[in-house]
Length: 108
Image (cartoon, rainbow, N blue to C red; front, side, top):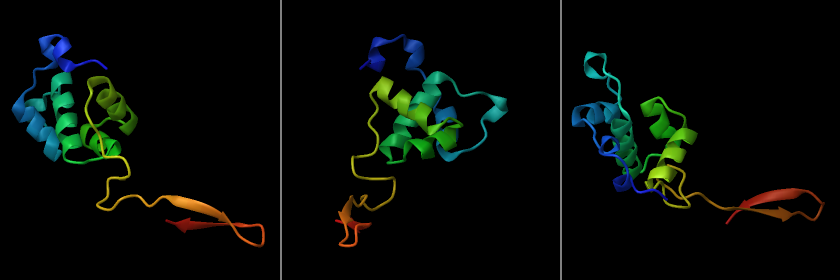
């Protein structure tokens, strides 16, 4: 997995004011556009706060899938396994065959 330190310094540079605007969903000053480093830093911070890829994508105007690809490529950790962005863990579902031949779903 590539490490951000292995790449050109332009990928590591970001403007703190732009990143702060991205984090709160504000319009960028003077019609500026967020650069690669700005978006990458915003993804790193939002993922660290526990936001899902789709939530991060909505804030940055990207798809959740694109956020996932960026996180994977740049080694940014996402949500812990077993969570869905909510405050409670996801309940695994077990399918049981009922006596009548149908299936029922039971949370474990």
